[in-house]
Length: 319
Image 1 (spheres, rainbow, N blue to C red):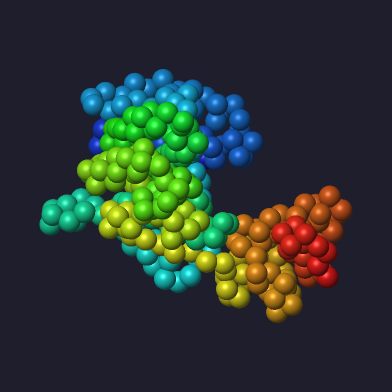
Image 2: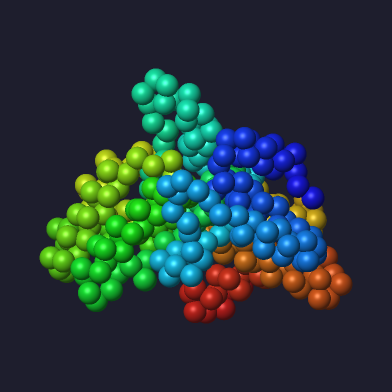
């Protein structure tokens, strides 16, 4: 069943003749129906909307395009457990996009080129999913391994194709593992051709004035060329969760399996060195165990799952 917000978005897209947004919302509804077990309806909605032919200068996206992975996310801001500062800045990105026409009247542009940096598993990719979902935008994940080839001239050509896509199809475009093309040009191991590739990316990024949002994610901003930073509208730095965030994350990920005792100091202490993704995986392990054994999630079980996750990284048993 479509939500009230989705119905309003469909009406607005129809009267605004925004076929791309209309299609995105329909696919979101289809995804929700599929999760609810209404597979026939979901398939019918998807098949129907895929037959819609867009007009004008919009470049049609082809799902077989190897440069992108196409996703219709359904993630909410509440799923993203980050610091208060990051939350405020994400809300600012959302607010500016939703009111971009108001900003345009005063010659201002909304934040739409975002660099996210931090350790693996700290929420960088999830941020892209949340932004796309909250703004009813399709998510295009740029396949970095398909861009960088042994024929460097092809890499620049593929970058041009990507930015043509960004300009022609409004959406959120995620460049994950961005340091593959954004590495510092002064590094000794960087060949001349890769420097030219980075130069091409810098030019494309600076010239881009589309309505799409570009998110570049990296595990180490120190590897990036300094010229990149001034090309982005905002830079978000992510870190492993603190005690308050760990408690919040466990509560969200366990959902109906959560009880107050699972937020004890002992549990928090065990999870303290783990990333968001690792804690989430531990919670999933607990839920699976509880389901398969008709049991409840206890503090001891959660601590054991967290310990197993820690031992997987240090290569030894953790007690």
